[in-house]
Image (cartoon, rainbow, N blue to C red):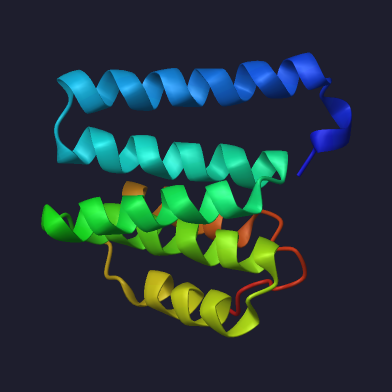
Length: 132
């Protein structure tokens, strides 16, 4: 996912920025902010190739999302994060299962649905591209 165009310094800055944001929202935010922060941390770790960290943050994202009763957009992205981490780890069955869960979530707002679909169908899945 574009890692070859970033330097080690860039990668370190990317990781630190995501972790600082996650920390900030863990102190002053609500469950929605924390869910988004964990999603972002997971995505950054996917981009950096930190497979286990990506899955750990994705799992936390899903747990926070479910415990807070967040639905549609947030739930779809929580499953997307976990699916993408599983894809990077080569966990084909887990990836496919979470891809299906993500796309099965009904997203009511048209703009939110468009954002989700653009991201979900438009990014690298390490050879496990989701079916439309």
